[in-house]
Length: 202
Image 1 (cartoon, one colour):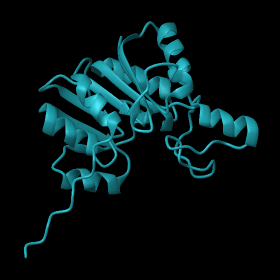
Image 2 (image 1 turned 45 degrees about the vertical axis):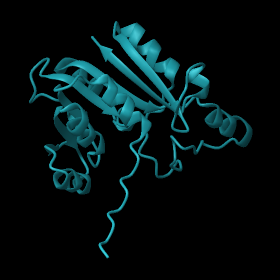
Image 3 (image 1 turned 180 degrees about the vertical axis):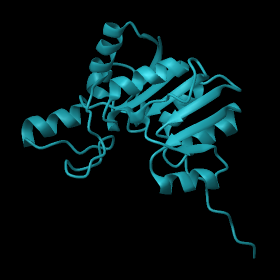
């Protein structure tokens, strides 16, 4: 009897949403691309021409095994090797809150990309508020699963923080989407969303 192949893991909703924002055949740069699951999806379903930058060498090995073009680098150091508007899309998904200089990284992304997709955990989600207010502890949630002593997240922001920043800096928000428990959030995203995704441009 032939062995059955393992079932493919379901694609996370945030990846589906991001893929829906990317035009077919687009040129994409994924900053902090991790193990390359999002890049692989964009290549497979949107025929995107993708590159990634990742600091974790073990994650890069997994990207290479998927046939992806990924370079070892620290996005905090900038993107000086890329000219202005080199890419149709630059993606900062679950990486902006982990960098030391988020404003610089975002400015660089907006410089080299005609569009930028930003995804981050929303620190104002009601479960995070509950844990801080009633327990007096740093929150641990599905979107913020780490303890204070081992979290890679060093910049904690909310939906309202990001919208206010874009308004202050003259950054246009072309689209937004919000998620909780792998389902779309349609209202009160600053309170109810675990993850926020924005499509922005300068």
